[in-house]
Picture (tube, rainbow, N blue to C red):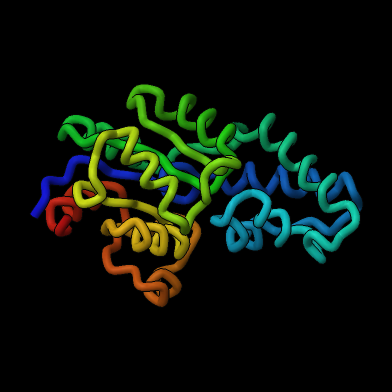
Length: 220
């Protein structure tokens, strides 16, 4: 067995509860163009595949709507200005990161959220950890492609066989599989266990304080 050297985290639904700010910005953009707003539970099911996909699901008719591009840009502007209004780390996350840091683990964030937001949120909430943070941008394929995970590992100077991925969604399970690294699926995020199981999830954490124990027992 290789030594575990790095832990790669998803962001939304894993480290941060971003759902209210995402919902508010989606609905601000929809309202500006007279489109029906969405509930927070609807938005919860839409997130995970990037902000454009989020808006394609939120705008009835998706990209076929003649105002879609304007609505999408309105969302981007709103979210860039308001991504920290209600967002907060889940209970126990900061303590988990401190534990991993004290254990000598390298850490990074990979997300399908826009790169500007990933970097801003990482800097604001997790600056003390100095984590690499990679979001959706033009020159790298988004999850479930393994590219963002592999880029993070490259920046950390860690091999895939020395890492574990942690996320809350089916996209995260598929991303880890594509990157050929184990995945811990968290149950405090945006997806239910049955859905994760149907996508092949094997390891589950109900609380952040369960993660260190899982990391000691997952073969890498």
